[in-house]
Length: 125
Image (cartoon, rainbow, N blue to C red; front, side):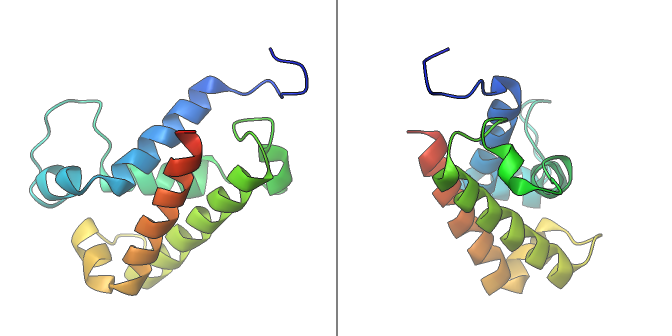
């Protein structure tokens, strides 16, 4: 561990990166999320990616996420933007909404993609 850097849970961070990568992957969206063509059992479904971010990573005090699986306040702000965008999407399409419903929603889905790209850029740094 480097002095001054928190001990990050790399497993959760890797799972967040996988979810964010899936939300940004147009090929995955077309192949698996729209057409059901799975290449590997490790590929995340639409529900897997969305629910991981908004359910499994939710916290009553989001600032506690820094040092747990987020490195700093920039990552926290980007993560909270993504989480909020996904919550708005789910509110728009319903809890049983599909990826096709998300795409049809227009702006709510695009906001999720934009937010996911922001997080992706920070996690790749």
